[in-house]
Image (tube, rainbow, N blue to C red; front, side, top):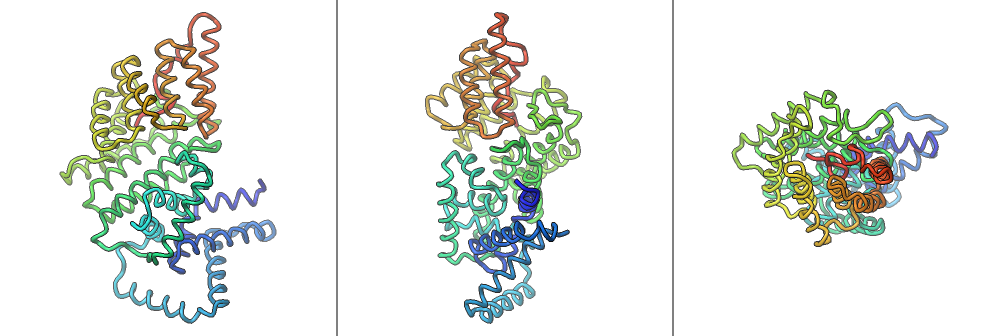
Length: 432
């Protein structure tokens, strides 16, 4: 990959959503906006090696794409009509400003329109807002790349056919649309927290963008407890970023992290956001329970001080709200820490029997961890090797293969695995 390609990729990661959002506001069609943006990216790849990278590369891409839109209208003889439409929209905005002025959030509400199915909403938003590639989305959803491509193409065609406006939803539709937006924001954050592919363990830029969107949403919807709760959850988890990777980029699991490097200001903001959610007295929902679990980790001075009994209870409550197998797997991890690996293994085996999380590395990773702690090294090696073959992130694969080697060396020496290989829980699912 050339320097220009790397520069364009970096600019797109940071500015892509804003570029597409600005174009969508102009042309009123999400699919066309993304096509125009991609044409501008192609121009950047051709021109920047000669002209150099512009000081404001995002604005450069937006301007080039807008010119392409105008050229297209002119060719189709629709320029006057479109100018009149833009003028009408401007007059309406001047008379009655919309509730928020963030184009990216407007883009998210459009991508989360009810005419799309849930999977299409998430995929489309992550593609146009999060800037994830189809390969990254395929790994995230555990489906073939072609499935993601078809899902996104159909979603854009559906929006265009339904003439979905690039606009703020009606207040009557707010609650349902907000729930969908929150789920997408958190998916973007989790991809930044633990990348599903590539050689970067943490993608801080992606996670910070999700956190920014969450904070903006919280400011716009102060009476929505789950919005504050989601912000709290992301603040707690983001507070660990500086301690989650070594200087060479390799992952550092929760038990081994230097908690002095955790961001205390973010933990404080997480505490405050969760308190704001609780102060609305509407009970704890999905995000509030997850935030409470993350808070348990955040306030523990050391890993050994973690209140695992409380975390088990919180996961049990969360399990009543969702049938998500990842929640059940996290619950099993918590049980293993509170009561030992023998108590947790049947919970994990039940997920295996149910064929939960097919093609995901998480289940064999956790099962391998538990077997290692029980001294069943040969079975643990098999499970962890399977997990390493399934994981898409090279850093995470390195952690798993290192553990496999440690277990093999321990078995070969006849003295059992090392204490490190036995682990403390968390090779697959990092608590919180």
